[in-house]
Length: 627
Image 1 (cartoon, rainbow, N blue to C red):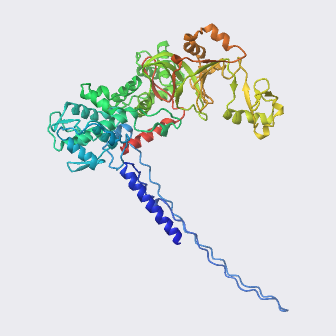
Image 2 (image 1 turned 180 degrees about the vertical axis):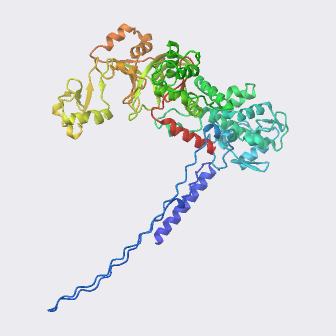
Image 3 (image 1 turned 45 degrees about the vertical axis):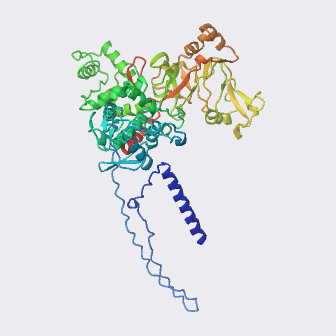
């Protein structure tokens, strides 16, 4: 007993030291939730009365007298009252949450690591209030008590870093008077809702009432609060409020580095803050403008009259309703070529099968007004905040749910193609890398997942199941062996499958490699007819490119390849690896945007093929709620 007690005491002391160290170093611990015991039922064992047994007398010469057995008393089973299931409280929508006050929790969001104070070469500023700012930062760095309210700093380390780099010079006040730059920052805070962010997170209630030129009491506290708002808002806008890996575990793009000092200095030198505090991505701007338009609308997403189902009709009231919704002359009640083209355009824009037929799915989509869903816009804006696209060179951009790829240069599309992506059970992972090789006339080395799940079961039933189509390779020697010589019952250990180059090769005539741990790449396909489908989540994870030959020409044209040479070398029986030069060593981004911008600059919707949107909406709402 004493040993157990001693162990508990030692553990408790160690935990207290850990918590003290963590607190001193600005580490945030999430308070564990209390278990609500009234949500559980303590089910006791039911007692049963003992049976009354009379002793049995030993038989004598006299007739045996049988014992009298008392009737069994049946146990009384108390009915267990079922708990009342309380309805789950619906979390407010994103556009509602951005209007709510800041959370009162004590969590501190650490944006940056502290800088090395010993190497700080900027002396303490002689400006008014600099000493007071230095004193507050060094003594109470996690919160500010101002006008009777305790304000938690969201990014205390970044705030401290920035002030130290400037010798604790006031950033937003001049002799206790609010500067023009401060006014710009306060205006940005008030408009944070247009970025699907919550203004209250950035101390709106403490700062929004002040105006440029106004003298403020305790100006050092005002200055620190506005600096905290500046660095926190900048981080949220440029890097997002959610961790990308929490939504996409395969995400590998590092978080953007933010130069708060450089941004502040540019603003202080005259560049307007609203031109500096932006997401440097044209697609984000298009989505953000659409989101702002909805937020500014008094009716938000305005309800529109329902369109009746056509049920095969080519004229009548339903056709007139459809024409009106799509912006055509509603006095005409005929399903003419103009209406068909308008329906087709709407379908293409919203990720539906673009056949020009207003069937049940198209009418349902129109009636849901889903093309202007603010939450869908908000979460895709967040995804764009995570992305770091190059602005000085081409890059390959694949939007998985849109079944679309492009080669882009800034916001200009220089090449595009339809693609086929991974099916739901084998989704294409979201990550980035660099293109390195084009392989003409490739072999297809069957991946382990496809081998185990698709090929091996068939080989166990019939060792010649893939005779003439796939070679069996001894992994130790590289030699081709007969399939019948392998014991497939034990999993085919020591062997793999490979398909020769040719017209029937699963990779088609070429593949495009950006080596990665997921064994994912772009490639051609012999199944060209599948690109006619509107829903193309059909592969085992790799991305099939409809215009593969055109892509090869685009990448290799500066390396002595024309179309005829590509055709010739991609139809040989031996594969050829072409190492791309530095110019064509493009970054590759496999993305997931369910609201996106096409090459014409139009906003489009895509179906959430992997169900990622639902999870992310909940995560984004919860994050906003607790900021």
